[in-house]
Image (cartoon, rainbow, N blue to C red; front, side, top):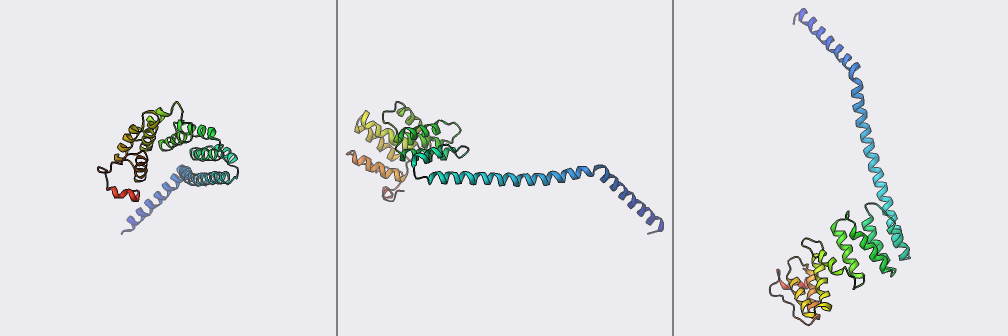
Length: 226
């Protein structure tokens, strides 16, 4: 490389350095803001995670403490007062404690509040409805409509509701109508093995013979609850 070429290269390098210094002086604050934003965002996320974990731990401790209270009525009141995303779970626990305290009316009221809350998932809402019907008065005027809704296609407790509808027919339509419904439920593909075992016992107790010939599985599996 000639002296001229070397000189030109050095001048170009100096010019690039000068331009870089000018750019840093002019736009360096932007880079600083970006770095500060990244660091600040990371710190905030860590703080938020820690705060969320601490809140969850506090809620868990509060639920545990409430369940350890020896008086079920006091335990129920404490659980019912816990709010937040966990309220559906604490509500179900509170209902169980009210029932243990022999305050059926409070238990049913708590369960119905869970069932009627549109924000609750169907699996919890329907469970609360089923439980309310099981422990509530048998002459509930809304019982039939509630069971009809619970037995809808796709409902999480559809077969349980159908079993309850069949048993209610003993008083309204007679044993034969109840047995017919129980036999149909025995053949239902969605009926669990444990429920089928119960259905066989119910049908037998009602004086009929369970229809096992066309079951969607081996009838011998009933002995294992499959």
